[in-house]
Each structure stands twice: as C-alpha cells, then as structure tokens.
Image (cartoon, rainbow, N blue to C red; front, side, top):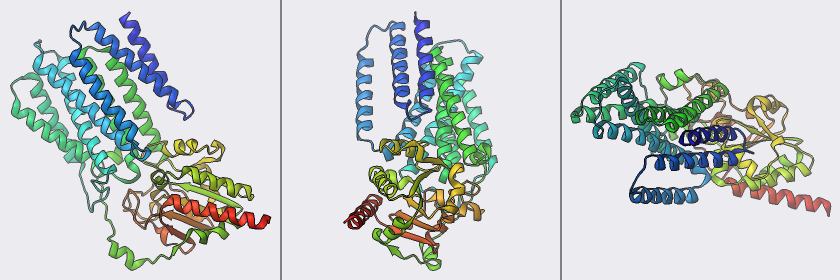
Length: 460
C-alpha cells in the first residue's frame, strides 16, 4: 500500500507539472502537485512508525504559518524573489540531510552513500548561495552590472575540483571540522561567482537552472535516505527545469554553457556621460492623444513596469477604447519581459485580455514597420536596439522587439534609468519617441480619460 501511494503521488506530481504548461490549467496543476506532496508526507510519517509527533506538528505549524503569511502579503512583483528564496531553502535541506546522515548514522562506508553525500553537499551549497545572489539582485541589493566584472572558466573549474576533494574527505571521515568549514567557504564562493556576473535577460535562465540544481540535490538526498518519492520528485523537477532552461535559451538566442560559464565584462555609463550625449523632452500623457486617435494600427509592448504599477486593468480599458475607435490593437510579449517566465501573460489574462491579442516576439516583430504607434508600457531591455548594435552590451544577440521601426513610439516609464541589464536604451533618445514620465498606471488612466472625453464630444 505504501508503494502504491508513492507511485500515485509521483503520477500526480507529473500531471501537476504538466498542468503548469498552460495558464488555463496552471491552478489545477498546482493543486494536484500540492495534494501529491501531502500524500507523500503523510505516508512517509506513517511508514516510519513515529511514536511522538509533537516536534513534527510544531515545526509543520510554524513553517505553514510563515509560508501562508508570506504568500498572502506577497505582491505579484515579488514572485520571482520568493521563488529564488524558497529554492535556496531547498538547497539548504539537501545540505542539512547530508550532514545529519553523515554524522548521526553509524554505517559501513559504501560508494553509493559517499556519492550521495558528496552530491548533496556540493549541489546544495551552490544552490543556496546562487539562489541568494539571485534574490539579492532581484531586490536590487546587488546591482546587475556594478561596473566591470570578469570571471574566467578556470576559476570556476578550480573551485569545483577543490569542493569535490573536500566533499570526499568529509564523506570518509566524521572528524573533519576544518575541512567542512573550508568546504562551506569555497562552495559558497563557487555559487556566488557562478551567478554574480550574470544579469539582464539571462536572469530567467539562471532561475530555472538553479531550480534544476535543487531537484538534482533532492535526488541525491533521496538515494541517501532510500526514499523513492524524494528521488522521483527530484528527477521531475530537475528534468522539467532543464527543459525550461533550454527552451528559454533557444527563445532568447542564448547558448546555455556559454552564458553560464563565459567571462562577462560590462561597462555601465555614468549618469554624467549619459546626460552629456542625450537630451530628452518630457511629454504629458495628453500629448499622445492625437497620435492614438489617428492610429489605425497599435502594438502595445508591456514590460516589468506594468507589473510594478499593477496597471493591467486600466491598460485593458485603453485597449477597449482604441478598439472601439477602429484601431487594430495587439500586444507584443517578449519572453524576457518581467522577472519570471509567463509573468506578463498571466497578468494580462487576469485582466481579461483576449488571448487572441497576445503575440510572441517572432510572430509580431515584422509588423512593427507597418504600425502607426508602438505603445511601450514600462519596458526597457526588450526594446533596446543596443542588443543588435553594441557588442559589449549584456543584451547582445538577444532578440528584441522592433519597436523602433514603428512610425511613432510612445514610452511610459518613471525615468530614464536603464533596465535590469544596466544597458542604456537608444530608443529613449530617438526623435520619433515620446517619453511620458511618471507612474504607468496614472499615465494610462489619463490617456483613457482624455480619449473617452473626446469620443463623447464628437458624439455630441
């Protein structure tokens, strides 16, 4: 019965993950996976014949309370940070189990146990520190491009070999405190140095890859505990996230080994340099009304600023107003828009935007040259022509939306500050670009208000 329950929960996890492939089935898939893990936990506790559940109940209550509070208070803009933080906790679990199993269990030294301990410690520590760096970047504690950052392949390889040696020594000896401390320091450095140079659109690749690391660490933990459900869940997470990483890389014209291991050298423009070369005239939202009224074709380009401002509802209202005037309105969705894959499609679906109006980059990019207005809402990197023109840019070779080819570009954002990559956008200073500074939600609300007012005047 226990084996059947484990197999059932494993199948439910597989179908739960499959449900995440579509926004229509994502909620059901998430619930299915949650129920599967609950079944696995209950069966495991009953199978181990635990006599005193007081500590387990207390810790479960504390963990559940904290997670519920965090989830309830979290905004949509914080989803990527929560994913990174929880992924780091997953790595910490693998490290803790490996150490506890090593120090508290009296056993004969076996090759499979040693390999499990080594993998649990090494991958777990890299997952912890790498995820914490991602969390710090997403919270702007660490700047994506703090100046010049150059790290060689050889340093990563050297740190990896040293960590591996320390892991083997720790596995064979239970009295190796100095080696264990050295391992924690060096493996932490490895995790940090793997992630710290990476920024811009590549962060989505890093997040999914680190989640696959956590899944791999869970597999090692499963072998260590002889837990089939641990092994099965870890394999599912690992393969799913590796597939997601490869798909994301292909979509963004990235090569996984090159992006994760290559040296990265980035130079950021100082504000004084930027202001010396470019001058921008700030426009008010009402300045765009005549352009929007006369436009027959409009492509809306939403970015992370839309998520921050929570302006999806009023943007949908603007779309409806423009559609009623006879304009052909569509949305251009870039895979790197937002901080986690699928964030913007989910947000627009929440606002009841028709899926027929959502187009991927490769589908709509050629239409910009025949478009009257490209309306950019809080986007930076995904419309930056520097990805094609500047070899030293972090966005180099990444497919970007051809908003600069539209007859007129209207950009709504708070300031001229660069995007997450740290690269200055050439499109902000283009002569056919209208820069509307301020809160995105307020700007779009003003547009809707003026368009409705002018429509009423014409009717009267």
